[in-house]
Amino acid sequence: MQPRERILETAFILFHRQGYNSTGINQIIADSKVAKASFYQHFKSKEDLCVEFLNKRHSYWFDQLNLFTSKNKTSKAKVVSSFDFLRFMNETENYRGCSFLNILSEIPADNTKIIEVIQNHKNDLRDYFKRLITDENIADHIYLLFESAIIESQLFKNQWSVDKAKAIVNNLIHQ
Image (cartoon, rainbow, N blue to C red; front, side, top):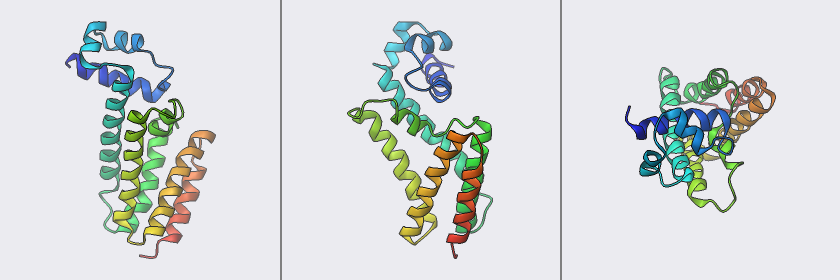
């Protein structure tokens, strides 16, 4: 891998596992085995690296969601299985939760560069449900249940909120 890709891959792991504030540039440089000058040749700042991380995480997350739900034929089945995907991600990533919301809680409120990427990710998730469910109010309800299930499962380190939200969604959709 080229230095830029190694830096990004290292940030992908560390920002998600440790958080943004707990991951320093020096750790990223050391773990990715690049020179400090090489880091700054590719990324002007930790903030710029975070934006790249979030963009990469966005692509990864939606690729995995679409792959996970693609075997389902109906919109309802796709939506319901998205909660199975959330369950899978919790187990795979040890209930680390949403990288976007985790970073949101770590940055200043005026960091519009990172906040815009986070908002775009959440808007894309909301749109995902809107494409599957034609009733916008129900689609928004599902989105809000999904988001709350992410937070609650991270907080309690178990799947009860995901399972409960999935059951509610299953009853909510009449298609």
